[in-house]
Image (tube, rainbow, N blue to C red; front, top):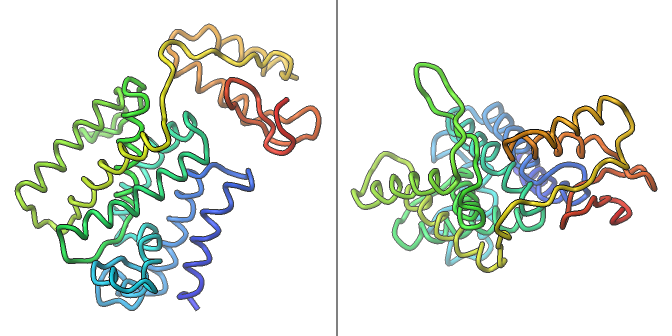
Length: 287
């Protein structure tokens, strides 16, 4: 039963964002957790590479000569070995994927996420004979693509001190830090059980696919969308005034995103989003 359930859930997770219900990055987080709980509850030995589920859905370099197993390039991205593995990866999607998708849109983000995840596994196969699970290749891919697209855009990074603190840093600093770390691990031939080669492959793929999609950000301040005609309550108008008065661009964008998430198209009642500097109704088009 579970052999059929996991592919169905993965297919739903990829397709449902294009029904305009949720963002692709949100779908990845939700369904990765769902699949993790299903696999750990139904297969106590899941962490073992001898588990039937791992053999069925993890990617192995031995599968490359067998096209009937190439689906594992996708399914392996939705499997995680333990709680820390999935928590760290999902934090990566939340802190990197959410703002990046907001910048470039659902379709381009989905392409980069899936493509870099696949590329990371193929890159790993060039140097290592082994098996892979986890979304980290795709996460390193979107980090690199984000840095190539908007290097000075600040993202919030969790730092583990005596307590966890959140620090806003330019995405290029975060990307270079991890690129150096992963390159060092690969150069030293680290054998800690983590696929650092795949992480490095994700970085390379992220930069490459950002150029394939011709991602480029126009320098200078982003022109804000005028939301005034669509604000219905005094509370919404007050939030909008505070957003426009905010000195930090990130704060301003966060408040505007909050308002847009709760707006509805005056023509059809559909949900709206900002696209190409305009409010865009997901159901009926530009408004």
